[in-house]
Image (cartoon, rainbow, N blue to C red; front, side, top):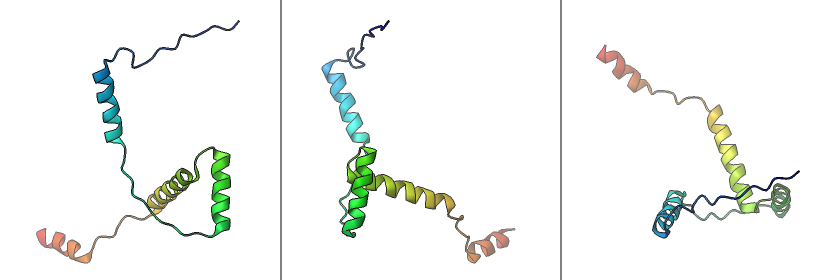
Length: 95
């Protein structure tokens, strides 16, 4: 037997002003973006669009996701930056 669940609007208790303020906060918290022009081979773009379609997302959002995941992966594998010799010498001089 199916039981119908009553949908509860999470914003029902808010006044119009509170709701508007909440929406403004959400938009203010969104990261800004910049436009980028990128040239790529047509066959690569076709492959990207096909995979984006399979994932059910617009292809530009798909490209951003791939870039984000790839850069994050590279950052995790990157070794810690080496300290310069001058900072090592300065540390030894303080001892």
